[in-house]
Image 1 (cartoon, helix red, strand yellow):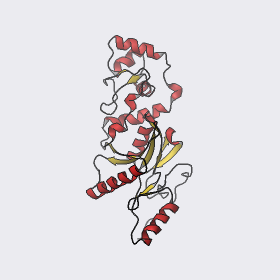
Image 2 (tube, helix red, strand yellow; image 1 turned 30 degrees about the vertical axis):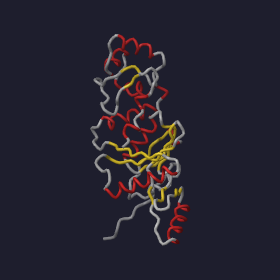
Image 3 (cartoon, helix red, strand yellow; image 1 turned 90 degrees about the vertical axis):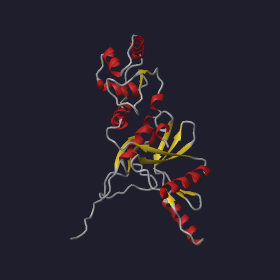
Image 4 (tube, helix red, strand yellow; image 1 turned 90 degrees about the horizontal axis):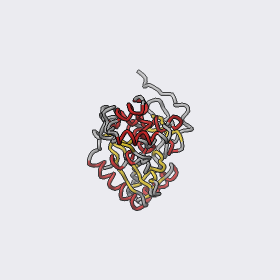
Length: 256
């Protein structure tokens, strides 16, 4: 029996694949998504990475981000942004009788404050063994020496987790500004709150809106709810946001 062969993927040239290129063969999955803060389409390697990209798009503390932006060489404390620089570091390590060891962050993000942060993404069920944790600790020290923060974002593996069920809805809503509620709706929301509305269902009923408008009300800053801890439904505790998007500051909440 001959080994299977795989064709090449088409149409990935316009997508940002970072410094560690996502495989272009059909033998390995590639997930594509749109990132407004990543200048368009990006190619990712896992569902967890796509989930984090959507978090970046929504989080008001994140100004921009890119996938797999560079490789950190752990023995010399250098950063390589392309294959040529990685080869140079390999050659340098070999001249000194050693071997280059690289770690590639899943993302680099820039906070609105201007500070950059490298991000490692892990599922809660697969945090990595002790050796991998030591590698991350060393990478964190190298990144700090280059003026960067380092975050480990742990994403839920259960498909029933509130964030997994709600985040795709919020991501889609964030890209549909054309159907966001008009600013004037804020006065009606305030009046409903004063009258005792405390759940998403009570606000939607008072506004004569159906459930499809709930994500739009959250991403537009009209309503606020804890979408990490509570699933989005009629019973979700909800309050007026008055234009504040603090309820979408989710990246640091998931960091370890």
